[in-house]
Image 1 (cartoon, one colour):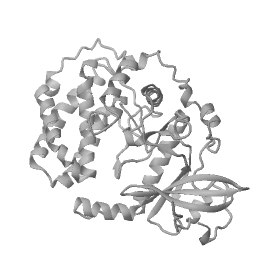
Image 2: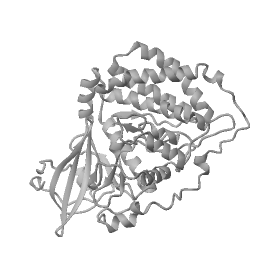
Image 3: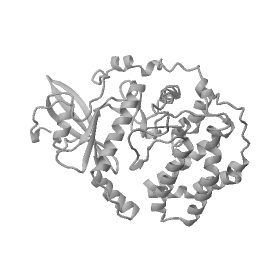
Image 4: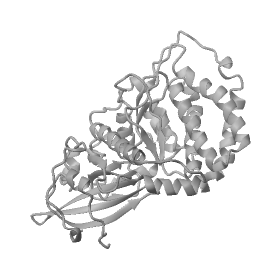
Length: 404
């Protein structure tokens, strides 16, 4: 692997938690809106490894302009919110499941280029394979136990599902939050689909009839759901294992407080390795919301949001449009009267298996994922501590341009 010629921006240098000589910087992973670097710093003959993700609104601009075929005004705020959203999500994830989350260090804006932001963390070698179902169920169920601090649906900062910003403004009801997000996803896809007229009419009927019919019962008829934390981008590419410890490792969340079943949105298609087998295991071991008999249809509803987003992100996946229309028609035919076809029993109470489940000890992670085992097996370079916020990192000794 060749050393990259990148010279670290002073803002990244200031955020690094150690002082020493930068002996190598390697390109490590990228997307259409970000690119990553592995940084190796030597201190007393010991190497300390970090990972920095560089988020550039310029790269987003060029990608969107060519993909969507229209110009969108993007400025440094886009890069800033990408970095901040990931940092805030990872801070929360690390507090809940430190055994599976590399602790975040800092985020900030470049000093030398106002169009760029960065997210800094510790480097960890990962293998692209899924952890055991038992391990992943325990981790995800711990996330899903975290209740919203406001009692509302949303998040305190915007987060990004890929390159698209999620409007996390606080909502009183899940139906309101999800309806807003679904409309946004449809509009995102329509830009690539060049405003498919059939889809436009279908979407209006679907949102008017099916969305309230499937989501309103969660919060009426004596039922209520509390907004719980969701990972927000739970698919196989964001779930891997540590190459040394073999412990589960999760990353790139798109967090908000919502309905926990939403996290199954990427698990209904054969294009994902993490699929419906996991969904049913989670349902059987942890539980789902009432009415349980409508669980599959709720998951199908959430999966449509992901399909719309996928089409908007990657034009090659517009091939799923026929499937999307078929699913929308299926649910419209199943619930043609919308809320008018709903019989509400006010005596029902929301005694879901999810909220009553005592089979899982959420405070006792599986042995393979404990902090202690991770440290013993070679992760002692990754401390578990409170992350650094921008401006609180120590100032590193000046680095020569040729040291990278």
